[in-house]
Length: 111
Length: 118
Image (spheres, rainbow over the protein chains, first blue to last red):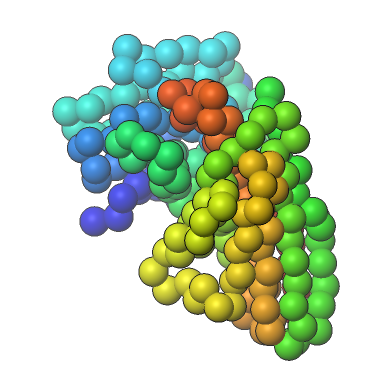
């Protein structure tokens, strides 16, 4: 089983739609979780951290389910500028260890 | 926020030559930096962990003699692709955490270096 798994998509949605991505991770001892956004031919940038209680930032909502070992990202009222690849990222337990990246889910928001 | 600068952003070289990529943390110190490689439509794959003042730790399948890593100071790590071949053409990205903000876990990325080997 891969460490971090995501549906690669692509998800093609119209402007204004709500879209959700899921991600599963295999290491039950993982401590920190993130969603990064990567635009084509650019470096990844942090979109939001994922907290146990769930968190919301504007149109974006992230949820963590430790029991089932999955993370979700919900985007409401999609904009054209949301088109990108969304990377699910998991931090191994403690220490200065590298993050583990999922392959990413491609989103295309269409006018 | 913290900034990581990577240079060059784009390089084209002939097969058999060596290419050096620099990664600098501009406003924070990083005892550890990470080098990733990303092929088209693939995820970021960790190549090695660069440790200031000591040897880098390489991931399985990454040749340490081909991908030379030097982390001579708390703000600079370099990756040298030696005797480059066309199959080394890829997007190389470095990253680092602010060691005073370790608990946040956020990783800051350089802009990436796109290497094309002819």
